[in-house]
Length: 148
Image 1 (cartoon, rainbow, N blue to C red):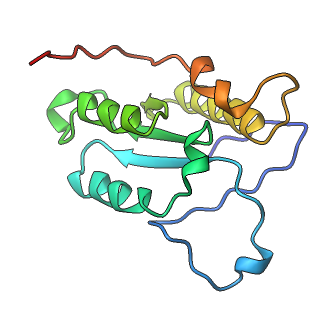
Image 2 (image 1 turned 90 degrees about the vertical axis):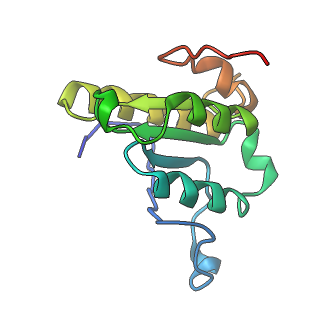
């Protein structure tokens, strides 16, 4: 767990898949950002995310959704190619953030990045809209598209 001081209060709700349960919906806090965690070592993880995407309101894809691809650096353990995940993120006009979480420094950097995205998506950064969010997030890697 990474503890980062902020000047705002944030609530993090974890769910294995969508839709969220209807009980307590009336007291659920506003959702400002949805982060889909994808384990690059599991095809099932990608399938759960794909099926969950159908339950996300289209307005969230205007800067309030991102994909976090977690796994180790070793390509031999990756079941899902990063290019496939990049295509998925691009098809929803949402950023893909590759995340290696082995070191404390990397976890802190990812947490800081997600907090900045949350602040923008929640409207806490004056002059920056959630629509501009994807332009603020530059991918940490490049993929080469093969034109057919």
